[in-house]
Length: 191
Length: 294
Image (cartoon, rainbow over all chains, first blue to last red; front, side, top):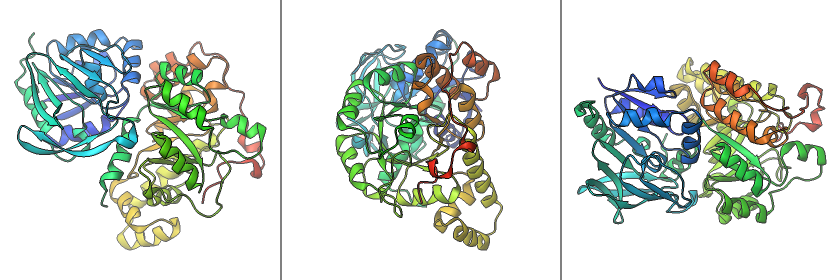
């Protein structure tokens, strides 16, 4: 069984833990660089991207994270997608540039505009929860769009990494986490 | 228990705040300090609880101008407080577009019998609780997040500890009861049977359970989280201390590494003076805020 680390600095890491279990993986919480050693893949959960960014910086986790993701898959949801993006606007903030997408934060509005919606996942219907969600404005070459909502990409895969702007960890549907676990299983761990 | 679409969204935002620190702020400058320090959300207020306590008088919903300025300044969620039972203040805050409403005992109650019927709102609510019965009544009314009340504005952690311990103990107790005992316990708690059954089956609240009221140091934050709280609210503890910026950062670190003594030591070093604080056991009953709420 593959071990999936869940970055647990802040956010809905507990919901991801349950989702990884549902999809057949072994979840562990990651708070330090040492914790990464045991992981075959990493999930960056939903939460507040500014808070996570701050803690990654203060705790000197950015470099270990880069080294990890150079070899192994990472999956970011919502705030996680913001952290992994190439560039972030509204307001602009630094990001790890691990996946070639540009995102706009809180693009659909405040909490009152959050919604449960149906998205088109490659012709298949999927329930998706959007909470103060970012919008993917651009997907770079090599990026594969796996789901769209009103024409906007909401699930994107590039190389070994993937992101969603919605929260698959909050719905019972295991498809998104299963796909990530497949990527973890097939990833050789080599650069 | 069936969770409506609407309720899942409300609880969803609370899930995003777990492991974090929600800070009371009274102006744009403080909101910026809080966001930069790593707060997951801010609570926009006119006065922090220790000043409300000192100034006396009637404490109401904050000025709309202050809340709006803070909403325009930070990118993290903004919460605001409405008086207990004051559904009109809550409706105004919802219309303004705040991300969460705190139906709070820190403000002077508007209704001495009823709380707000929170299910009729699109904006999510957080409510305080001192015990499981109170928590489940608030959830029955539609609260999507519970926070233990503690004693706001005191800087004394003793009440927050009492409340989280009480709720955790009462939940553990439910998990060992038979079905017929759950009915009796629902009567004792003054809570709906459906929610009592849910807690008995799951050993936890159906919504996130945070802690508030008296947290003044990184160690305080880690203490309540080790006792079972999933995130913390810090009110007067930050902006009534000597160096709010470093204290805010230290408490954020403590909330993440609440189980890591080495990181907690790092967070506790080189901090200025904490807020002065009030010994809650010396406060007369009439000055307690936690007894507000029914």
